[in-house]
Amino acid sequence: MSRVSIVIPMYNEHRHIGRTLQAAQMAARFAGLECELIVVDNGSQDEGPQIARRFGAQVLSLPGLQIGALRNRGAAIATGEWLAFLDADIEMPQDWLTLLIDLEARGEADVAALDLHTPAEAPWFAHAWQRRTLRPTSHASHRVQWLTTANLLMRRERFVQAGGFDENLRTSEDKDLTMRLGEAGATLLTVNESVALHWGYEGSWREWLGKELWRQGSHLQLLRTHGVSLRLLRFPMLSIGAWVLDFMAISALLDGMPHVALVMLVVTSLPALALSVRQSLKHHDLKLTLQLWGLHWVRLHLAGAAFILSLGHWNARRPARG
Picture (cartoon, helix red, strand yellow):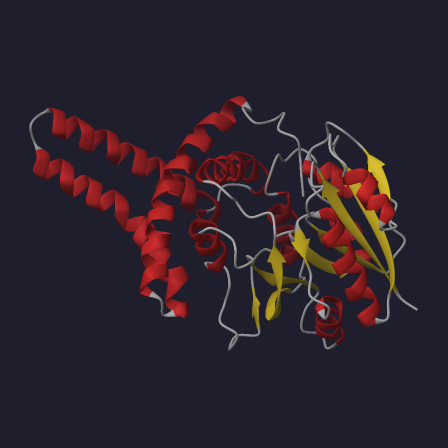
């Protein structure tokens, strides 16, 4: 019988880790696989490690490491033919492993992940933000340039050949790894025939802003790792441009030119509008378009701030969590 090793980094996730582990075990049984659960704890101060052990997981206590290092340490002791990475707040559907392993067997994917959705009780901004990446059910699978480790499945030898995660990255370690896998010839596939539930959604505006500021802090490191490219430069340059136009609009307003200021503010909002239209068009939902327009406008400004702050490694000590 084949075995799947499931690596889950964790920091203070007592609310979700039990659900995550139970769903993963059920998916392995449904697929007829042996299941090895490895939880890599980054110094949790709650009951998360004890809960993980009650579900049969091997728990490694490794405080102070970056997220890539946590995932690598778990993968290093994994014994399964298949290697999966999950965040600690993700509930996988029962057919998760069956679907993705069948895709690999048919030669349609080398590395694959399920689309994510939020539970019904999530606030509107968390729901809209997650829905922007969710494709209609008419598109069961889609080749992509990179995948996230909210859920990720591949054969173990592919991970080893790629050299694992970059342990210097504070975030976007998943983007870096899967981009390297793709550059090495692997087919990356995202699937929405079934969807996973993201229970760690942002419950408040403060949490959403904080997470996005943190997520946007890796652009400089990715440029250093992969070299300068339009794909990696596009978003940080848009965000810095938004800041520049905002300052010019304020200057025009102070100089008694409100019409010029208004034009600049409109121009500043256009990249966010373009992003929102591109991501919501497939859903045919005007309300979602407007919601994403506002969220992307905020995100563009956060990204500019994060890009500048990353020069000083401002968030290097933030505990890594799945």
